Length: 481
Image 1 (cartoon, one colour):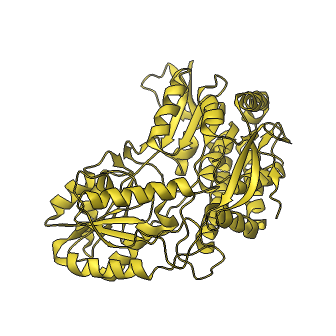
Image 2 (cartoon, helix red, strand yellow):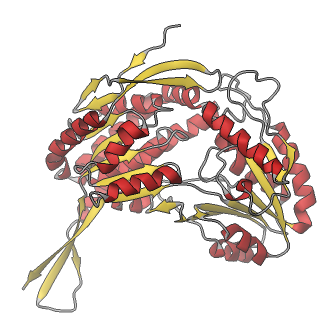
Image 3 (cartoon, rainbow, N blue to C red):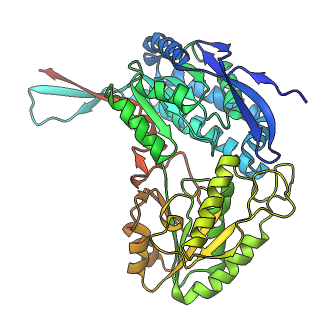
């Protein structure tokens, strides 16, 4: 089989080939899917110049006009839904049902920001009440300029939609860097956008590595704002480079989130939510609730049930319709998670199940879902983001202890609470230092609600009206009467 060589640059309405060759693999088979040509600082500069040229006209379009384009993009994604699901599964390893959730999220996000863009026309130039009758004031929200969007590999297209849709709705022009690990779905999305009627230069794509493309985007003086999703280590580098030109920065980074199982919780529900929070997308989620805190009264039966649940999960590739969990994304991530598991055992943590390659999967980056108990509070397994299918379970004696353990982290992205008493679950949720808390619910995410967290998890918020405001400047016009 001859793997295709795909142009990885879309600049000023034209597809181009870059000088670097990025090998794209199928993590289920370890086979090469394609070669994508990547760019460099010169390609980034070309894309920024195209975007700056297009900005003047695009920024002056009405919200209603932008909404038409956004809805066309949503319709284009819906029309190619099956192809996009297949690309997600082959390049990222997601089971079909997970990939379908992602594609539907993209459709919903573009439609949501189409609605916000259309509504923004009626909200522009809103009168502001002043304490003096000698002056009037009006409020305008204006696009911040050309924005650089740098997205990760764990949710291809989803994180792109969460940034791109509000940026376009706000009237910004865009330079997008997809992950070099999973660019195939993003490139197909770019083709859909190219057919949407978006003016030339408003949307540009430069595939490539973080060093060759991400760094030049972060430091480019022609970019007004950078929005990055990825690791904390790289997020710090993005922020440092952006500081050179004092540009705006939004960061969505790591998490080490907790799921709290209260003494009156429904055990079956708690096990389902713990499994979903730890093993969805093979645990490759910044929102993974990988620290499970269980009331001591329920700890024994919970451990029995979560181990049985983990052992029952069918691990397999997207070609297996029964697969419930796919592989890790590549060899580097696979080895990283294995190293964390082995280091955890060395610290005295007890591995109750999983953490090894399934016997029926000789190839691919597959890993059995792992459950640990007796994990030391100072171990990396408990404190660091593993980004793999690893749950750490610990008992607690009081709600106060559970809250203290959950909040004892450098991160504060999400949390979950399971319990029957409404007043108690609300009180615990309110005490948690996290940007999003689920009560008796799976990790459902809606475009209308904000995404982002406390502490080192985030700088700013995505989704909801806050996602669009992240790409807008505030202008007040004050007039003497």
